[in-house]
Length: 299
Length: 299
Image (cartoon, rainbow over all chains, first blue to last red; front, side, top):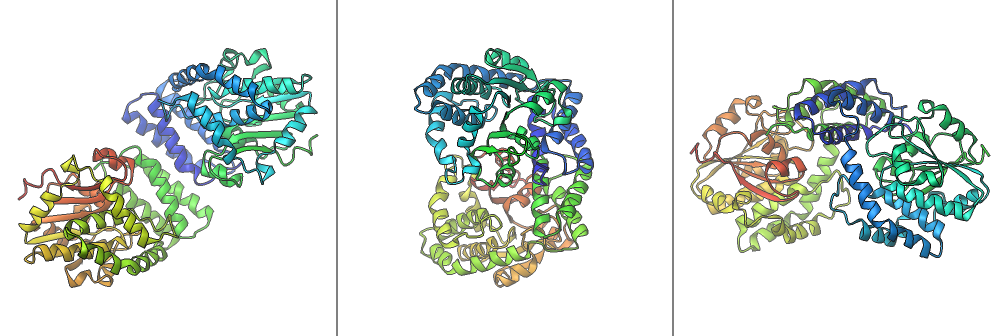
């Protein structure tokens, strides 16, 4: 997905949010915004939004010396989700369609914005998410929530690549992977994370900490962006990407960077911004399970 | 009021909105955003936000050759408000406190965003505004809605300067001026507009078209910005400003540019953005009637 002009104000908003998370001075925050301004004229709209976001994060790291400004926020996320995990696991197990429930939950979990809502009661929030989620699924438009195709593909795959997104949400990824393996015990899953801390995205240590490595081979994709730009990923990842029977891409950043790639990808995301909603032809906050249009070509 | 860092993403958002209103190509819109980016490093936060907005509008005028991209939107605003004017006038006349009702209505009218809500039913919208407005007035905090001071000042003034804001809303200004003259027939009112089309702000021809000149002396302030920076206004306006017993400043742009000026100003506005709400120590969408803290000094 290319960058839309509407992404430009958003780059500055995100830049300011991250700068503030580093707790640097207002003067330094202005200097960071100034440097980002200087990048804009040279930034082509043919690049994906996470590429610009990556450049912005590099400026912030360089100016503040901070590698991981979202460290505290991620710790809060981890602890909160851990507290409700038994409840979530029960919900999935007691469901009549555990795979579908796990899919819905892991997409819905994408909306939980810990930074913006510090006092979130994740337990009741999750239950209400499950109650409202069906209204955010366009049942009449299978192309926006194509669970049938997802589960058919799962049943006919051997090698599955699962590309994670945010910290917190990744515990739900583990639950979904468990359900996928229950549905088709023959699959072998690789779970890919970012290579270094990028916003609140997961890294390899998060995946191991959440026990994902007990159910999947956990690797770093090599990505230093809040997304997956294939020619900036490492060889191990791209080899697995190119040979996978099925690829699960979580969240907006991965969608933005992989939506034009021809591969057997299923995008699981919530449309959290108007640009994504326009690109996917859906409403804001819709829960999406989109099969890559060209996925059948590469089979 | 100085510029906050949060204003910077907003500058880009507004720049994009206005560029789109000119209907210029996406390529030209990107060029405009690029030129605005180049301005940011040289823009001091000690300037007011409307000063930056003015510089952005100059870039847009220069690149597109369009003087008044909001012409159509303003025409829609005028026609809509004209259709409900008899109803509004009745509401004020039948009120037990017509001056207070006219004050509340003209501030509440500031929220009606014609550009964003093309299908607005202004009649019922106004009635609901009147119904909800009291909940948006912090009665326990007189400094945020100081109608007593406003009406005392009105009863003890001769020369009043009224600085208008948006098209559409200016019909409500006329109603308020009529009520002010009914309450104190001795007053002489000057009504000031922008010098040229700036966003959807009023110009002299709008004031005359709405019949404001029948109740007040209508003048251009000389301002070419969406606000009132005194040293960029004309001499006629600043002379009246400096000698006025009471000054009524409508809307956010005038508040942003006059809030640090020591003069007998009453700011009538709705806090439509988080930065203004923070500056005024109120909640978003609060209806504000704020007396300039230094207003008594200049009496």
